[in-house]
Image: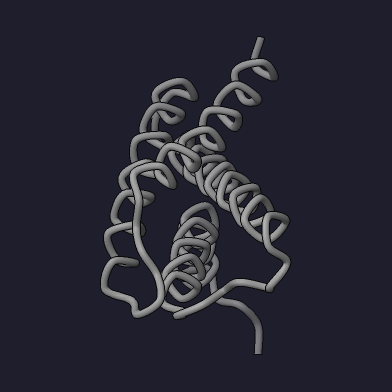
Length: 127
């Protein structure tokens, strides 16, 4: 039983879009957890902020990868940044409803640092 041509087209259309959507789902699930602390004090805090930057840098890169299939790379980068930033803001808002968590604009700014780093990386590789 092989893969049909129609199924191959559907899979190839989903290919660039599935990873950022899957990452957004993972971020949502992790944000719904009441407590993600490790008990390592300041190292825990710093580590979580680094993970925040990295996950949103990755999200921005994945959205750029998807959108460059349908528009210019620079426009795709702008869309990816804006979409990732909007998701960061809604993620922080979501956390305000989770017991033991709180959403802050500072975390959105930290996420934006990661997204900015991703954009700089893409722009440097394109020149």
